[in-house]
Amino acid sequence: MKPSTKNKIIIVDDHQLFSQSLELLINSFKDFEVINRFENGKVFLSYLQEQPDAEVDLILLDVNMPVLDGVSTMKWIKENRPDLKVIALSVNDDEEIIIKMITNGAKGYLLKDTSPEIFKEAIISVIEKGFYFTELVSGMLVKKANDDSKKINLKEKEIVFIKHACTEKTYKEIASEMCLSPKTIDGYRECLFDKLEIKTRIGLVLYAIKHKIVLV
Amino acid sequence: MKPSTKNKIIIVDDHQLFSQSLELLINSFKDFEVINRFENGKVFLSYLQEQPDAEVDLILLDVNMPVLDGVSTMKWIKENRPDLKVIALSVNDDEEIIIKMITNGAKGYLLKDTSPEIFKEAIISVIEKGFYFTELVSGMLVKKANDDSKKINLKEKEIVFIKHACTEKTYKEIASEMCLSPKTIDGYRECLFDKLEIKTRIGLVLYAIKHKIVLV
DNA sequence: AAAAAAAAGGGTATTTTCACCCTTGTAAAC
DNA sequence: GTTTACAAGGGTGAAAATACCCTTTTTTTT
Image (cartoon, rainbow over all chains, first blue to last red; front, side, top):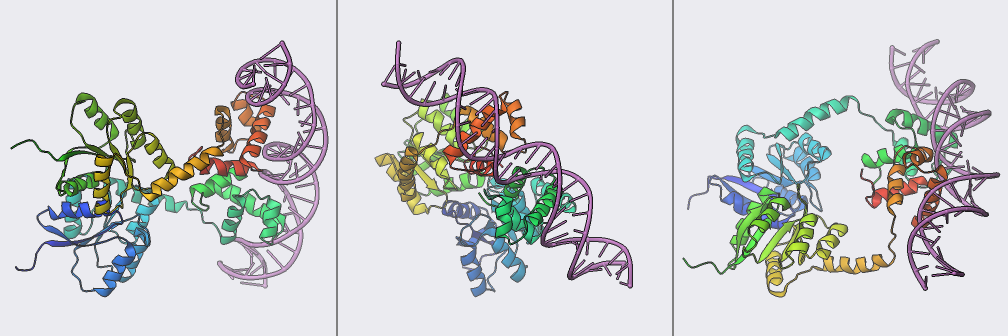
């Protein structure tokens, strides 16, 4: 039997049901075949390091994985194997994650509720033209460009303060924990209220949670 | 050709890639076949109402769906078709959701990262024995039984108050919005601080967010 | 029908939060 | 070598939040 001329695809996804099922789907396409599946970023990167010359036309990379998630995996690929073509797969359209995957070099971002037809189209597009972006993703890239212009950047001490503010401690207690005068804390607070356009400590807590400065 | 004697399975899942791929996987099992797929609870329930006599051995029901989610769909099934056997499928192990699905009659709860072997085992178990629960799920049922004993139940007005407290409004403003005296609000606050074992409004906000009384 | 619990409101005092204005020392920019 | 920026800190006063005391009315339980 002569070597296959089909496009070689690798799936990296911890959802075994999905991963294995998706392989069946892809293998049912005429010009594509799945040559390998991995259950998280770590084992996939190990494979890449051991077999740097393996022929791979496309990687389907899940975003939400244990051990080494999609973003971290993508970062490694950007650093070490920018030649690889990756389509990110995810169930959610979390803006932050999408942006991270793309700025780290993903050539496409598909939601898992994509139809098999669009899916096939995306695979072909990435292999032939080098990219595939839906309107959803393009829209986010435009939105990001806007957001960037009015970005708020918090200093390290401010972030520490915010974390303390998201507890039941008083400002006085926070000051003593941070080894600063209560008046300095008062200054941090006023500055943040101004920058973040809020008026109360409650607003600060809500901001911190929304922007994942503190986790709940 | 004589009618199939295979077990008839229905998939309800909005993730088309997954849904279609899973069908391929199930059809590759000897004794099972997928007779229908639906992309959300609404279209599935419509089908059930139009074809009440359709033969179905098992339903694979995704939890996270648009239009009509898994929990709502499960509630309808409990009310109207408790004879149907359902395995809930989900990507996350959110305790609250798992409990809801099971108390509404799901016969099993599988994470989507289950291996195809376990998956097959679960399908067989539900069809033959009527249920299949992993240790994860059993553990949660035990934990729930414990939690129930020390459950805090919030009254409707308290919940309204908490939602207001999670904004930058003052108590005085909240009182006027709720058409109550500030003193009454003061009473709500004190009572909640006591019940929830907190000392400040910040604590109340954190509690509300953690328990999904308010969303961020 | 009496007792208990809950829901609404009041008084007073303390602590905390917030706003606004100001000083000093130090490091970076021009 | 000024100017600028900034981090740290101070004073004062008003508003908000919190604690702990209380009464009245209604509803629920027994």
